[in-house]
Image (cartoon, rainbow, N blue to C red; front, side, top):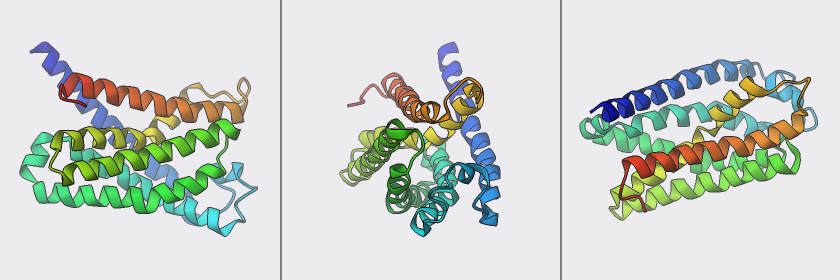
Length: 213
């Protein structure tokens, strides 16, 4: 009983955390509505801000990723799924289309010009490949009627989606410009965010979904 209550509280806290950080990301993203090429992250990307293709993919990514984060939150509540099956499917399709049609291509291009040197580039491209794989696997699973595998892969897909949050948490908590080399820290952080999120997802699957396979 106590263990079950603890798990429920942990799930609620996790959902609230993702929601809060999604809103905070919206605040961060709002600075880019001015199209100023020197604000925020763009200040570190002056070598590519005059590339119209890179800029297009950058704006596409930052203005759509929060929708992925918020859409994903609605997909893991059993009560929501029972009472809103049609809405679940609609939001799920929006999540999948957002990732596969918009963000995977955009992030692939952005990843090629990532900060963090080779470590950062390979980290972002690995995230992008896994993001596409998990999301496609989730879609194929539900088309075959395998609900358990669908849920498993959606959890893994969302774990990659939320690396954006984990990345920023680590950066804000541990990065010190006087102590750390920015490029090295950035590259390691890309991988660290991915590994942490996948480990959390895997632990959750093993604990909560005994039929994980």
